[in-house]
Length: 75
Image 1 (cartoon, helix red, strand yellow):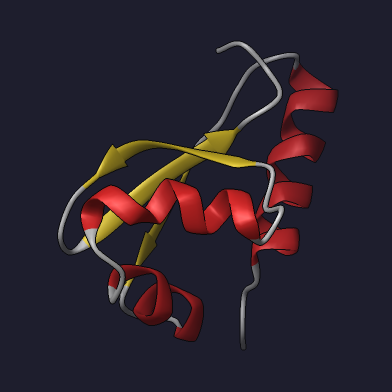
Image 2: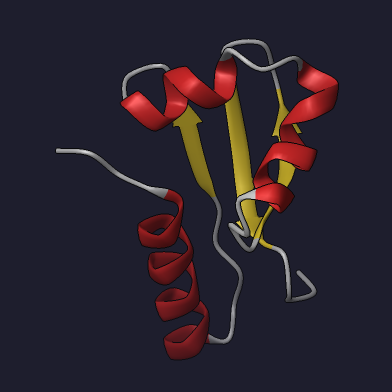
């Protein structure tokens, strides 16, 4: 099963809509999208997410994983 950025954003928006609270999603190398994102340099990852209009903001940026939340909400 492939998870894409739109799916991640949708799930986070759904949670926010139902609860009014923010949630986060961890991306690691176990998925195709994670392998692609983690192959990019640490300092370039947010720019990549912005370029693909993901609607996601990186809150934890590690060499082996990235944790994201919705970009358009205050958590």
